Image (cartoon, rainbow, N blue to C red; front, side, top):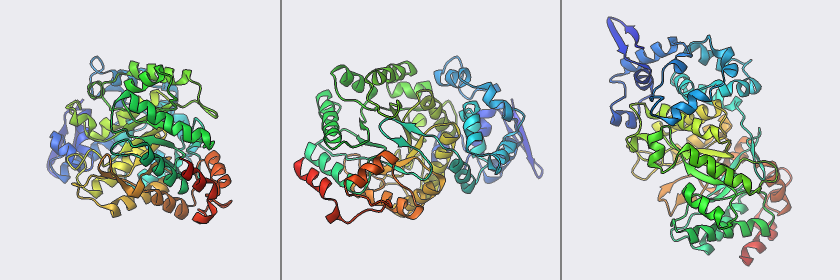
Length: 460
C-alpha cells in the first residue's frame, strides 16, 4: 500500500509501510548507510504527516519482513492478541500518540493493551514523538520481573554489576564485584562478559559468582554472558546457571548470524527453568539488543534500524525475560553517529520495549570513535531516571577494560538513585542495610561502617 502527503506543490509518495517508517525516522547514520533514510527534512516531515494519518491496523495488514521467510514476523503475527488491541483498533498512529499521552491512560491501561501492540506499532508512534513524549509515556509503563529479587517496581532502580576482566582473572573479577556491592550495585544481576568462550573458564566464572552469592546470602542472580549454546553445555555439566543470556535481533536472518533460533532460545529457557533456582519468581532469561545489529549482518530487509530494533523486543517478550537492555551506543558511530543520536535512540528503545511489556534497561554507552562523551551519557542517564528505567550498568570507573567502551560507573548509579529518590530492589536493599552499606533511608554509609562487606573482601 502506498502512502502520500503533499507539502506545498510537492507530492511525496512512499511505496509501502517499510519505506514510510524509514523516511519518518529521526536522522541517524545507520539509516543513511543503509540507504533508507529521508533525503531531506521536508521528506521526513511529509512521511511523519502521512504516518500520523495511517490507521494503526495497517501494521497488522502489511509485514515489513516477509511472513513466509522470517520467523520473527511469524511470531509477531501469530502471537498478536486481538482482544488487547480492540480498544486501539480504530485509531490512527497520530490518534495513538494522543491516546498514550492522555492522563487517563495509566499504568494499568498500558499493561492491559501491551499484548496487542506490535513492534511496528510501537516504532511508528515513537517516530511522531518528541523526547519528552517518549519519557512521559515510558514512565507510566511498569514491567516487574522476579528471580531472587523484584525488579521494576516504582521508585526503584536496579544495576547490573559488570565486573569484566581482560583475562578472566578470578581475583580481579572478585575485587570488582566487591567494589560494586560497596556502592549498592548488583541487584539486576552480577553479569560477566567472559574474555574466552572456553567452557571450563565459563563454568569457573559461574562457580566464582555463585560462591560469593551463596557465602554472603546476596539476594541477586548471576550470569556469564556467553553464547546460549555454551550456557546449555554448562547446565549439562551441572554449573550453577541463574540466567541464560543471549543477544537477539529483529529478523530471522540476523538471529541466524548470532547462531540462534526461537526454538534454541526456548530449549535454553526450559533448561534454566528445570534448575528451579528462583526464590521469588521464575524469569530466567537475559537479552541484549542494539540498533544497527540487523544492518551489520545485512539482515534488515530494507527496514530502518529503529523499527528492526523494536522487532527484537517481540523476540524478548516471547520468553518472559528477567532483563532486557539495549546496548545503545556500543555498535558504533556507523549506526548512531553522535551523542544526540545515541540519546534519541536510547529513549526510543526504552519507550518501545516498555510499551510492548518488556522489562527494559539500557547500557548507557559509547565507543571512543563516536562523536560523544561522558556528558552525553550523563544526560541520557538522567533522562532514563525520569523515564523509570528498570536497570542500568555498573562498570568499574565507567571504562570496560575488556570490551573497550565507555559505560556508566558504580557512582553514576549512586548519583541517579540519590538525585531521583530511587532505591534498589527491595530484597537487595534489605541485604545492603544488613551489611552496613546503606542506612535505613537508603543512603550510602561511610566506608568505616561497612565492616561486614570489607571483611568479605579480605576473605576472597
